Length: 413
Ligand code: IMP
Image (cartoon, rainbow, N blue to C red; front, side, top):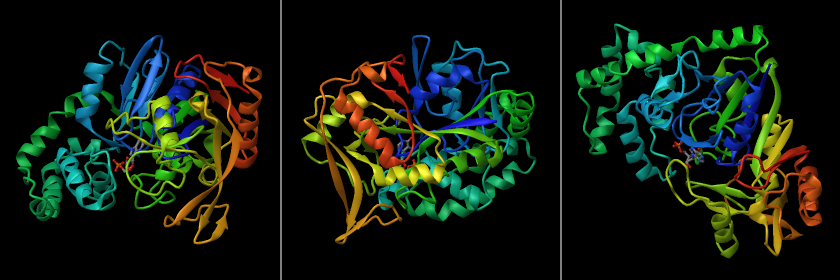
C-alpha cells in the first residue's frame, strides 16, 4: 500500500516539513508529477537543503527515492542537485528515475519564458508547460529515448515544429546536432539511475515495503480541476500521483492534505481571499512568504474553506496537516472564508468560476501565542476553537498542526 502527501491549496503549503517528519517511516519516497517548478525544503539531522527534483527521502539513508513516469525531468538541475546540494549523500541503490519520465529541453525553458510574457500565467520559467505539451503531442523525449537510434530524428521533429514559434519569439533555433550532443552528455550519469520504476514499486509492494508519494504544487493548480488557465500543466491531485507513479487506485491508504492556516499563491490567477492591506503584509512577513523556486513574494490572504472542501473531496483526503498556525499569532481577528459571493449569489462550492468571486468571511477572535506548541492542550482556547471549527467546515480531521519551522514543533492529534 502507499500513503500520499499533497498540497490542497495553491502550492507551498509546507509539504516538505510533513514529508520530513514522516519520511523515516517509509522505505520508498516517490515524486510522481511536475518537475523542477517545485521547491522542497528538507531538514534532516540538522541539515537543511532545498531541492527541486530529488525526492525528500534523500537525506534518510534507509529511504529509496523514485522519480516516476509522470515527472518532466530537467537533467541539468538533477545533476546540479546531485553534485552540489547532496554531494556527500550515498546514492548507490537509493535513487531511481523512470525511463518514461520526459526530459525538459533547455529550449523549452526559453520558450516558456517567452510565452509567459504574452500569456501572463506567471510560470516558474522551468519549461514545464512546454514539456507536457510536447509529451501530449507525442513528440516528447523520454529518458529511455537517449538510447534510441532515432534520437536525432525525434529532435528534428521537435525543432521543425517549434522553429516558427521560436523565430516569432526571436529565440535562436537550436542546432539539432548540438542538441543531441547535449542530451547524450547526460546519458552516462542517467544510465546509473534509470530503471523501470513501475516494476520497482510493484516489487516493493509485494515485499510489504512502505511507500510514500509526495505531491508537487497544490490541488488548485491542477490542470483539470484547478483555476484554469492559471494552473500548472500536470495533475497534482491524488489520482495524478497514483497515475504518475504506476501504482493503482486500490493501492492508496492515507491521503494527507497539507494546508496552511491561511493561504498563499505565487503567479497570477484568481485568489478570492487575497488581502491587499496590512493583514496580507503581516502574513507575508510573519510567514516568510517568498517563493522557494523563484524568490517571488507570495500573494497572501485568509484560509479559503470553499476551495479546501473542494480539494479534500477531489483528493479523497483522509486527514489534514494544518501548517504555520503560529503565523496567525497576535492577529486581533482571524478570518475564514466560508462561502463565495458571485454576482450577488452565495455559493458554498467551487465550480470553476473565477470572475467576480468575493469571499464571505466568518471572523474569529485572535490569540497571543501558539508558536512552538507541541501539545494540543497547550494551544490557547481561541486557537483551538479556530482549528475545531475549521475541521467541521472542511469536513476532514486535522491530524497534524505545525507551530513553527522547526521539525520538532508539531502537534499530533
Ligand atoms: P509552471 O508550473 O512553471 O508552468 O507555472 C504555472 C503556475 O503554477 C504559476 O502560477 C506558478 O507560480 C505555479 N507553480 C508552479 N509550481 C509551483 C510550486 O511549486 N509552488 C507554487 N506555485 C507553483
